[in-house]
Length: 255
Ligand SMILES: NC(=O)c1ccc[n+]([C@@H]2O[C@H](COP(=O)([O-])OP(=O)(O)OC[C@H]3O[C@@H](n4cnc5c(N)ncnc54)[C@H](O)[C@@H]3O)[C@@H](O)[C@H]2O)c1
Image (cartoon, rainbow, N blue to C red; front, side, top):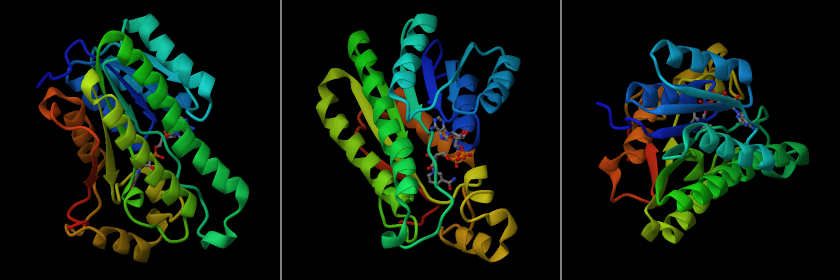
């Protein structure tokens, strides 16, 4: 399939996990890919794989919580490739602490809100601005299962991911008649560095790993490619009548 032939597709957080899988999937389907991440070394690794497959790539070091960098990200995309057809906003952080709501340190609260909510808002804001100029486009934001239900002991994560769903639904309504679709995806446990090495360190904690698998009806974690496939579907013409969704990618967890 080459659903994105000659389309310009941008991915944030493309240096790892779900973002890398999404960037590679766009490349396989004929897109020109804008690979962005705050970690330039990892973004370059993703770009290297794409170039090896003869995909046209622009690589950018972008911290999404910096509004000017995000504005520049869209500008450089347009300067290089002339337009922006699809954007998948994957970049996010889950924090390192497990604490009850009243005890969560303020700096950690602000850090997660800054990246997951403010950062995603900056992305959507400048992506929409460009899509309005060119007459349309499609955006997907990666929220989480924690954007649909509470996640005990990680309130900034759950609050910021719920807010991403509100941002997506509101923007979806506002631009629905202007040929811009915007959807969210809400994955449960996906096997990436964030979950294996991060807050819950599943790679070193067999009990927590079992619990993470059992959260899904399928009794396994998802793979980043399985989330990328849903992101590409939502960006594609096959989802032309879908906007404003917060779609679980969840191995049956929400059933
Ligand atoms: N892995 C899961 O189980 C899971 C479940 C639900 C939602 N998610 C969400 O999916 C997204 C991707 O997660 P992942 O599991 O692939 O994690 P990951 O840690 O493997 O990848 C996240 C990427 O985002 C980048 N990033 C972090 N902060 C950034 C910033 N300020 N600006 C730009 N880039 C930044 C990191 O450098 C990294 O490359 C996140 O938004 C996460 O909250 C993950």
